[in-house]
Image 1 (spheres, one colour):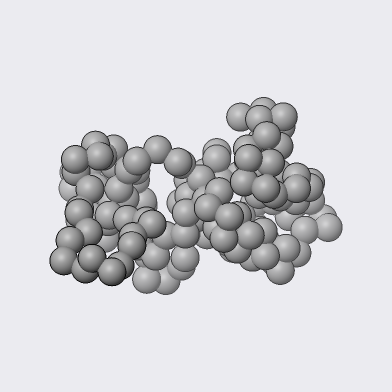
Image 2 (image 1 turned 30 degrees about the vertical axis):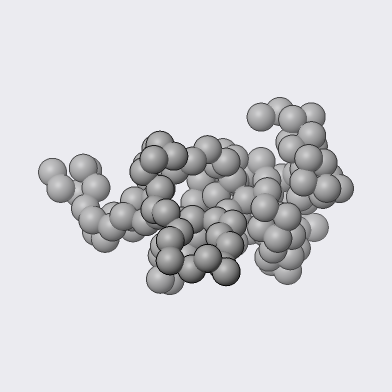
Length: 135
C-alpha cells in the first residue's frame, strides 16, 4: 500500500492518520504477525520521536477499531496482524514462525448452543512443525 492508501484505510476505521500511526500500520502490512517490540525496534532508527508507549497505544487503537487483529498464538508475545482476509494462523513450535493459512467460510467453526450469545470474531490457530524445520 502507498501512503495515500494507508491514510484511506485508517480513515475507513475512523482513525485520524498521523505520521506514527501511518508508519506502524504500514509496518504491519509489510510484516505480518509482528510484536510491539519488533515494530518499535525496527522503526526507531527512522523515527527518533517514536516511543514504546506510542507503539502500544497505536496498536491498541487499531485493534479497538478493528483495523488490525490481536493474536495470542505465541505464549511469549502478543502479535498483531493487518491482513483482513479470512485466514487461520499456523505457528511452528520449533522456530516460532507464524504463517497465514487460507480459510474458506465453510472452514470456520460455528458458534452453536448459546442462543443468547453473539460472536463477532473467530480466531483459528494451528501448531506444529513448519516445512523448513521438518527438513
